[in-house]
Image 1: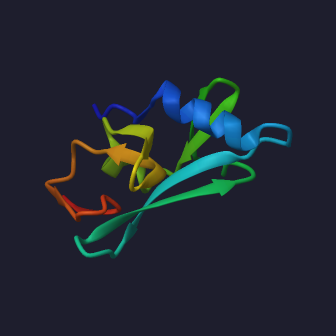
Image 2: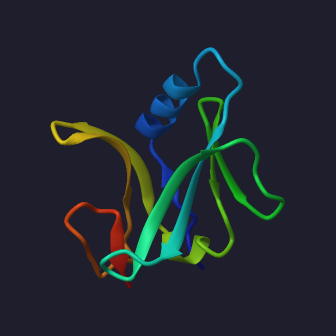
Length: 108
């Protein structure tokens, strides 16, 4: 059985900061074909979940994953990092056999 992705408290906190003072929107995490390693992450803000989305909730916030992307994200950790090179949502994916230097593209 594949475990669903996990969202860290830090990622939910950052999403809460983004949504502060307005109607909250969800963070969508999807997998697309392409990138320099075969697959790439698509991380964006979205108003409402689709009927078949997996909805991960925490701190009053939501992260959405579509059913096609879900197997590629089994056991993954969705986090937020704030480093010298920039602040961004990141994915630690145990299914990826390799990834590009920027971490947005991977292969299985």
